[in-house]
Length: 259
Image (tube, rainbow, N blue to C red; front, top):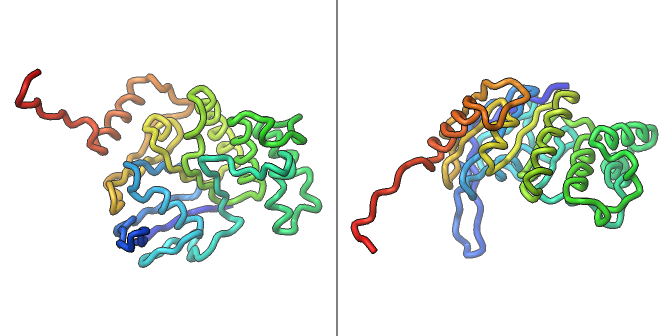
């Protein structure tokens, strides 16, 4: 399995409801090696999710190119799995059928029953196959979403703030789960997040973007081995570096009045 992404001089604009042109991305170029874990971070509206959707093939660039293993990405495909912030499970299907849905849609489910069972076990949902989404916690539903995204063995897993709706402890557990699965599956992962600590904890590289129109201002290599100590000195140094790049450590001037 490979999964190298090449983004070259990509520009993307949208028209808002008022008919105005909004420049989402400007001259974005990025190389992602097979097996890399990349996090995209930046202020809201900087084009992180737009970039993810370009890689998924859900939208196309206005100019420039997005390639997967040398071929142009022109549409969604089973070689890219997508996990959203909300679990997006079908409420009328049980967990097993939700995870198997993509295989059935591609008409490759027959003979793949063991594969579904394998991924149910991989994400820790053994025994919950017949449960429906409303019967499970948010974290368990996200585990099911992760299994659904992985069961087709994609080359690339795209994660659009997949843990943002979870409580802090469930979120940290899911981060460890993603790292464990990544180690076992050896696939490329690209994640959008607003959480600096999450990006440092999970990523090989962190792509820092500017406010709209989104441009890449820095790509930070995270030279820490796993598992990473969230409160360690090196971890905190990366945290401070990312905040500096995002201009969140500039001291504000003192007011010229007093109460």
